[in-house]
Length: 171
Image (cartoon, rainbow, N blue to C red; front, top):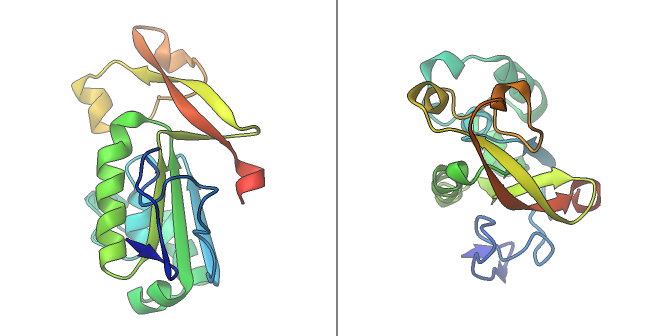
């Protein structure tokens, strides 16, 4: 895949389309930048690029009016000027985010997702807590998953290790 005229390395660290966030300049040439920390399943990216939001209840959310105000009202305007990066630590969201990123890029949008990656204040790894996979939990896309062991996670949970990036350094 080509990005900004340069060939991007293979995605070995589950960063959609690139080898490392430091090996490429995802935001070069962007007039506007949207960074979604805790992207979950990418709903904000659907809204940002005016793609068909998969969930009816989110189609006219608060984010849409902000996107219209700051990034323009049309898909064409956003395609021409906006780059987006979603950061999501939950490994269960990696496949749908990578698929969404490929689909958006195939249609000319500059969208990437840093999957299995947590925003932090230092480089390294962090423990990430996942809720037990229940039907009700999957219905809300695991909103309670976190680097913190919150009240939601009082019961059984799964702990995984994910990469951490220094968000301030990266931006």
